[in-house]
Image 1: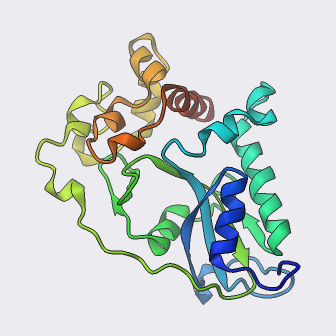
Image 2 (image 1 turned 90 degrees about the horizontal axis):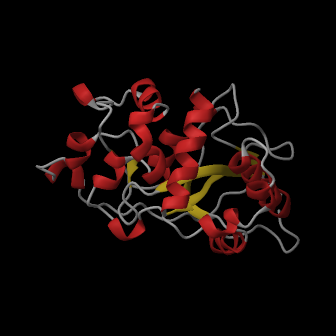
Length: 231
Protein backbone atom coordinates (compact mmCIF):
# COMPACT_ATOMS: atom_id res chain seq x y z
CA UNK A 1 0.00 0.00 0.00
CA UNK A 2 1.24 3.47 -0.80
CA UNK A 3 0.52 6.45 1.45
CA UNK A 4 -2.42 7.46 -0.74
CA UNK A 5 -3.90 3.98 -1.07
CA UNK A 6 -3.33 1.10 -3.48
CA UNK A 7 -1.13 2.05 -6.39
CA UNK A 8 -2.20 1.72 -10.00
CA UNK A 9 -0.06 0.04 -12.61
CA UNK A 10 0.56 3.42 -14.27
CA UNK A 11 1.73 4.96 -11.00
CA UNK A 12 4.06 2.06 -10.34
CA UNK A 13 5.51 2.27 -13.85
CA UNK A 14 6.11 6.01 -13.53
CA UNK A 15 8.05 5.51 -10.31
CA UNK A 16 10.01 2.62 -11.82
CA UNK A 17 10.97 4.73 -14.84
CA UNK A 18 12.19 7.49 -12.53
CA UNK A 19 14.77 5.14 -10.97
CA UNK A 20 15.88 3.47 -14.21
CA UNK A 21 13.59 0.48 -14.66
CA UNK A 22 10.78 -0.39 -17.06
CA UNK A 23 7.55 -2.18 -16.14
CA UNK A 24 7.42 -5.43 -18.07
CA UNK A 25 3.77 -6.34 -17.58
CA UNK A 26 2.34 -8.47 -14.84
CA UNK A 27 -0.04 -11.25 -13.88
CA UNK A 28 -2.34 -12.34 -11.07
CA UNK A 29 -0.86 -15.30 -9.17
CA UNK A 30 -2.47 -18.69 -8.89
CA UNK A 31 -2.32 -21.12 -5.97
CA UNK A 32 0.47 -23.14 -7.53
CA UNK A 33 2.83 -20.16 -7.80
CA UNK A 34 3.78 -20.53 -4.11
CA UNK A 35 4.82 -16.90 -3.72
CA UNK A 36 5.78 -15.44 -0.36
CA UNK A 37 3.16 -13.43 1.47
CA UNK A 38 3.22 -9.63 1.47
CA UNK A 39 2.57 -8.00 4.85
CA UNK A 40 0.86 -11.18 6.00
CA UNK A 41 -1.38 -11.41 2.92
CA UNK A 42 -1.13 -13.46 -0.28
CA UNK A 43 0.36 -11.66 -3.25
CA UNK A 44 -2.45 -10.74 -5.62
CA UNK A 45 -0.42 -9.06 -8.38
CA UNK A 46 3.07 -9.61 -9.74
CA UNK A 47 4.70 -6.83 -11.80
CA UNK A 48 7.97 -7.57 -13.61
CA UNK A 49 10.68 -4.92 -13.85
CA UNK A 50 13.68 -4.76 -16.13
CA UNK A 51 15.52 -3.20 -19.03
CA UNK A 52 14.22 -2.46 -22.52
CA UNK A 53 16.88 -1.87 -25.15
CA UNK A 54 19.34 0.88 -24.29
CA UNK A 55 16.91 3.09 -22.39
CA UNK A 56 17.78 2.25 -18.77
CA UNK A 57 21.51 1.52 -19.19
CA UNK A 58 22.74 5.11 -18.53
CA UNK A 59 21.05 5.14 -15.10
CA UNK A 60 22.82 1.97 -14.03
CA UNK A 61 26.12 3.08 -15.62
CA UNK A 62 26.02 6.24 -13.47
CA UNK A 63 25.30 4.32 -10.26
CA UNK A 64 27.73 3.81 -7.36
CA UNK A 65 27.44 0.04 -7.82
CA UNK A 66 28.71 0.28 -11.39
CA UNK A 67 31.68 2.41 -10.37
CA UNK A 68 32.84 0.79 -7.14
CA UNK A 69 34.68 -2.13 -8.74
CA UNK A 70 33.04 -4.75 -6.51
CA UNK A 71 31.50 -7.92 -8.00
CA UNK A 72 27.87 -8.30 -9.04
CA UNK A 73 27.29 -4.61 -9.68
CA UNK A 74 24.03 -5.05 -11.59
CA UNK A 75 22.58 -7.45 -9.05
CA UNK A 76 23.45 -5.10 -6.18
CA UNK A 77 21.95 -2.14 -8.02
CA UNK A 78 18.82 -4.16 -8.80
CA UNK A 79 18.38 -5.09 -5.16
CA UNK A 80 18.67 -1.46 -4.09
CA UNK A 81 16.36 -0.02 -6.73
CA UNK A 82 13.72 -2.76 -6.82
CA UNK A 83 13.85 -2.98 -3.02
CA UNK A 84 13.25 0.77 -2.83
CA UNK A 85 10.19 0.48 -5.04
CA UNK A 86 8.91 -2.43 -2.95
CA UNK A 87 9.21 -0.35 0.22
CA UNK A 88 7.47 2.60 -1.42
CA UNK A 89 4.50 0.54 -2.58
CA UNK A 90 4.18 -1.85 0.34
CA UNK A 91 5.24 -4.76 -1.88
CA UNK A 92 7.53 -7.74 -1.68
CA UNK A 93 10.49 -8.12 -4.03
CA UNK A 94 11.97 -11.20 -5.72
CA UNK A 95 14.86 -11.46 -8.18
CA UNK A 96 15.97 -13.77 -10.99
CA UNK A 97 19.52 -14.02 -9.61
CA UNK A 98 18.83 -15.25 -6.07
CA UNK A 99 18.10 -18.80 -5.08
CA UNK A 100 17.23 -21.43 -4.33
CA UNK A 101 14.39 -21.14 -4.86
CA UNK A 102 15.03 -19.84 -8.35
CA UNK A 103 11.97 -17.88 -9.37
CA UNK A 104 10.74 -18.80 -12.89
CA UNK A 105 11.11 -15.37 -14.51
CA UNK A 106 11.04 -16.76 -18.06
CA UNK A 107 7.65 -18.38 -17.43
CA UNK A 108 6.41 -15.32 -15.57
CA UNK A 109 7.46 -13.12 -18.48
CA UNK A 110 5.33 -15.16 -20.87
CA UNK A 111 2.35 -14.71 -18.55
CA UNK A 112 2.97 -10.97 -18.38
CA UNK A 113 3.54 -10.27 -22.09
CA UNK A 114 3.16 -12.05 -25.43
CA UNK A 115 6.69 -13.38 -26.01
CA UNK A 116 8.20 -16.12 -28.15
CA UNK A 117 11.14 -18.44 -27.57
CA UNK A 118 14.08 -17.71 -29.88
CA UNK A 119 16.91 -20.04 -30.95
CA UNK A 120 19.24 -18.13 -28.60
CA UNK A 121 17.19 -18.86 -25.51
CA UNK A 122 16.30 -15.15 -25.12
CA UNK A 123 12.60 -14.41 -25.33
CA UNK A 124 11.55 -12.44 -28.41
CA UNK A 125 9.64 -9.22 -27.66
CA UNK A 126 7.33 -7.44 -30.10
CA UNK A 127 9.04 -4.06 -29.78
CA UNK A 128 12.49 -4.83 -28.36
CA UNK A 129 13.31 -8.12 -30.05
CA UNK A 130 16.10 -9.84 -28.11
CA UNK A 131 17.18 -6.61 -26.40
CA UNK A 132 15.49 -6.70 -23.02
CA UNK A 133 16.03 -8.22 -19.59
CA UNK A 134 14.37 -8.77 -16.21
CA UNK A 135 15.87 -7.43 -12.98
CA UNK A 136 13.18 -8.21 -10.43
CA UNK A 137 9.48 -8.41 -9.65
CA UNK A 138 7.18 -6.69 -7.20
CA UNK A 139 4.61 -8.75 -5.29
CA UNK A 140 1.65 -6.60 -4.35
CA UNK A 141 -1.09 -7.44 -1.85
CA UNK A 142 -3.85 -5.97 -4.02
CA UNK A 143 -5.08 -6.81 -7.52
CA UNK A 144 -3.89 -4.33 -10.13
CA UNK A 145 -5.63 -3.62 -13.39
CA UNK A 146 -2.88 -5.03 -15.61
CA UNK A 147 -2.26 -4.53 -19.35
CA UNK A 148 -3.80 -7.09 -21.69
CA UNK A 149 -1.37 -9.11 -23.80
CA UNK A 150 -1.29 -7.98 -27.42
CA UNK A 151 -0.95 -10.78 -29.97
CA UNK A 152 1.67 -10.49 -32.73
CA UNK A 153 3.32 -12.97 -35.13
CA UNK A 154 6.51 -14.79 -34.18
CA UNK A 155 9.29 -13.32 -36.40
CA UNK A 156 11.52 -16.37 -35.88
CA UNK A 157 8.94 -18.59 -37.57
CA UNK A 158 9.18 -16.51 -40.76
CA UNK A 159 12.97 -16.03 -40.68
CA UNK A 160 14.37 -18.22 -43.47
CA UNK A 161 18.01 -17.12 -43.28
CA UNK A 162 18.30 -17.55 -39.47
CA UNK A 163 21.51 -15.49 -39.29
CA UNK A 164 21.72 -15.96 -35.51
CA UNK A 165 22.39 -19.68 -36.01
CA UNK A 166 24.83 -19.23 -38.88
CA UNK A 167 27.09 -16.59 -37.34
CA UNK A 168 27.86 -18.05 -33.90
CA UNK A 169 31.64 -18.66 -33.97
CA UNK A 170 31.49 -21.03 -31.00
CA UNK A 171 28.89 -23.39 -32.46
CA UNK A 172 26.94 -22.94 -29.24
CA UNK A 173 23.64 -23.19 -31.13
CA UNK A 174 24.34 -26.42 -33.00
CA UNK A 175 21.47 -28.88 -32.91
CA UNK A 176 18.90 -26.18 -32.26
CA UNK A 177 19.68 -25.78 -28.56
CA UNK A 178 21.78 -23.14 -26.83
CA UNK A 179 24.77 -24.65 -25.01
CA UNK A 180 25.93 -22.05 -22.45
CA UNK A 181 29.04 -24.03 -21.52
CA UNK A 182 30.23 -23.98 -25.15
CA UNK A 183 29.63 -20.23 -25.31
CA UNK A 184 31.43 -19.67 -22.00
CA UNK A 185 34.49 -21.65 -23.03
CA UNK A 186 34.72 -19.80 -26.35
CA UNK A 187 34.42 -16.25 -25.04
CA UNK A 188 36.96 -16.92 -22.30
CA UNK A 189 39.67 -17.79 -24.86
CA UNK A 190 41.63 -15.59 -27.25
CA UNK A 191 39.55 -16.71 -30.22
CA UNK A 192 36.50 -15.34 -28.44
CA UNK A 193 37.85 -11.77 -28.36
CA UNK A 194 35.27 -10.49 -30.86
CA UNK A 195 32.41 -11.74 -28.69
CA UNK A 196 33.95 -10.24 -25.56
CA UNK A 197 34.53 -6.85 -27.14
CA UNK A 198 31.38 -6.56 -29.27
CA UNK A 199 28.83 -8.69 -27.45
CA UNK A 200 27.13 -11.89 -28.60
CA UNK A 201 27.60 -11.98 -32.38
CA UNK A 202 24.62 -14.29 -32.82
CA UNK A 203 22.37 -11.90 -30.93
CA UNK A 204 23.57 -8.93 -32.98
CA UNK A 205 22.90 -10.85 -36.20
CA UNK A 206 19.15 -10.91 -35.49
CA UNK A 207 17.46 -8.27 -37.67
CA UNK A 208 14.49 -7.77 -35.32
CA UNK A 209 14.41 -4.48 -33.38
CA UNK A 210 17.88 -3.47 -34.56
CA UNK A 211 17.41 0.09 -33.29
CA UNK A 212 17.21 -1.26 -29.73
CA UNK A 213 20.47 -3.22 -29.81
CA UNK A 214 22.66 -2.75 -26.77
CA UNK A 215 25.55 -0.32 -26.97
CA UNK A 216 29.07 -1.78 -27.04
CA UNK A 217 29.61 -0.85 -23.38
CA UNK A 218 26.35 -2.49 -22.34
CA UNK A 219 27.04 -5.66 -24.34
CA UNK A 220 30.62 -5.93 -23.05
CA UNK A 221 29.45 -5.55 -19.46
CA UNK A 222 26.97 -8.40 -19.83
CA UNK A 223 29.49 -10.71 -21.54
CA UNK A 224 32.04 -10.16 -18.79
CA UNK A 225 29.40 -10.76 -16.15
CA UNK A 226 28.44 -13.99 -17.95
CA UNK A 227 32.07 -15.17 -17.93
CA UNK A 228 32.49 -14.30 -14.24
CA UNK A 229 29.27 -16.09 -13.28
CA UNK A 230 30.16 -19.26 -15.19
CA UNK A 231 33.91 -19.26 -14.76
